[in-house]
Image (cartoon, protein in one colour):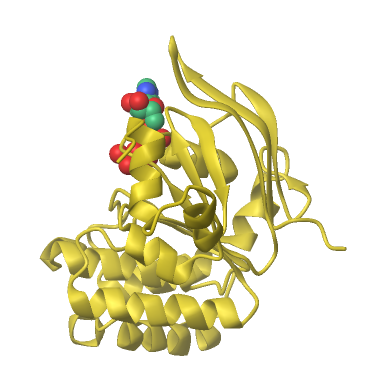
Length: 246
Ligand SMILES: Nc1ncnc2c1ncn2[C@@H]1O[C@H](COP(=O)(O)OP(=O)(O)OP(=O)(O)O)[C@@H](O)[C@H]1O
Ligand SMILES: [Mg+2]
């Protein structure tokens, strides 16, 4: 059996007195479409940032394809394409296409391969018309699209998307779902956070619900609905995070 795509083992992250993630253990299998759910401040982004080595755990370990996320930071970095929750695009003087080519350069992809790839992604994310626009000339949603294209530029094995559909219009949401499903069909791993529980239910094979840094539930959405005797995943979620009975 292959090692999991991502293995989180007793992860704990504290900021002073605040425990952002508390003893979180979970495995995401290779090829799995996995959802990380929880209310604002639950610890989702903190967890993701430890997986990509941006945040150092207070204790616990993270392995990506069996590699230690901290010690093997560089190799782990190559395996992952990430679109962060906050839209930060370095290179204010670069245009959309140049940002993608720059990203390719970072991963050592030669220009002859990078150029068609960038153009394909610009096309796919509806940015072709904006290929020569600088970042500051893009709308919020267009920046989100560029961020997603950038995450895919080096054709990663694992795609991590922190609220990719926040601020997305209907078309982008549909395009993104399609793109994610095709990525999934290629046998790649996806870790997604979202506040749209219907989206999670539609896309994810398994989800984890975090609340105040702790794992509250883990399983297939249908399984969670069944075991909690609820018709909607949203009701399971509310029960777990609010303690609501009805
Ligand atoms: N750099 C930091 N310094 C101090 N506290 C932090 C830091 N980053 C996160 N936190 C705190 O850790 C907790 C978890 O934050 P995190 O960003 O992981 O939540 P989240 O689940 O991603 O929420 P959201 O849905 O709002 O994005 C919050 O209480 C937050 O204030
Ligand atoms: Mg977050």
